[in-house]
Image (tube, rainbow, N blue to C red; front, side, top):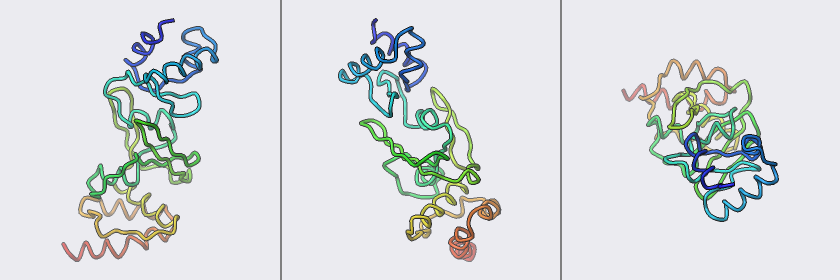
Length: 201
């Protein structure tokens, strides 16, 4: 089988390859596909991301956002990445930061660095869906991204540095409404910075 041609064909529709679906599609055994993928990994055409899951390096113009919900459907981009995207923070995280209802995990390879933090099912809401060249991904609304960020800082026992957050870019009634669904400590952490922002307007 011409695996380079097969990978080039698969690259037209996405960047993720899974051993079992490829085996089924091409009428091969999973073990045969696994061995072939190992060979293509050595040649630099594939990059392992997880057990049985590979990044197709022949896919043109892919980004980590193409992979977020392909790897974890029950996740959305939030925390530092979303804060930066919405202009709420000037910090540029190295990893693409996400939350998921599945266990926490970091996926790190030569081309990809994605972190997933586990969030309770009753806090899995408040996100939008955006399109990429190949697929779609979920990203937290600005208010939800900030609340997730505060929530995890408190959960980790870390200080919550809100002095650089651009509160003027937030829908504050929505922020307060969303905050009611979190532990009360989250709202307490936000109240003083929000009041200071209003006083400065």
